[in-house]
Length: 265
Image (cartoon, rainbow, N blue to C red; front, side, top):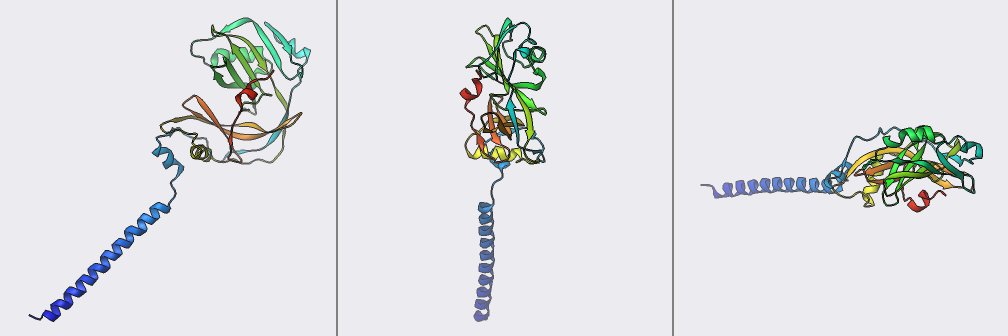
């Protein structure tokens, strides 16, 4: 037996094995490195936190900035309102009404309960849509619309209904924006998923929650003395309860002060 040849064969075999193992080790290391460097998509992040969402609006939506002015109501406007005791506030921008006959609501409010009243008994009623209900303040808020798009939490473009302990609407206040003017050309807004990512990064979307509604509207970007500039805004509703808002151009979270936005006197 030629031990020299056998020794050489073993050495070559072990060298080949070492090269193979080194190659496999490098493959595993590179794979792990790639896995670490590959960013996790927002869909995966939401899935990991068990945050559910339904079908989102299309991503090729275009919008623009525009301005509007608060309407100054007059006595002639009030003559159109029946079954109400109405007055105008000092600035003339708000109608304050007490109903002669309260409107009884069901135990669980549905917007359909007020649909006919809003349309038939409130000025420009067809230009408002249901926005939210605040059970702590006993209010139901309707947002004004522009081109069928809601104006979120705008103190100069909303109806605030007040109901009593018997679940009866007894009064309301109304403001209205007019003289809308487009300030820029239309451009693409950020995808709704990007707005959701911003909210998730800031801890606004809690694990195991559900995004039940996503829609595009407008909110005040700049408030001037006699007018305001409005910007496209994503509204993201969580668990059918909490609404979160993100500027659809800038991607910044909008923090509305509810007290300032609801008090329209």
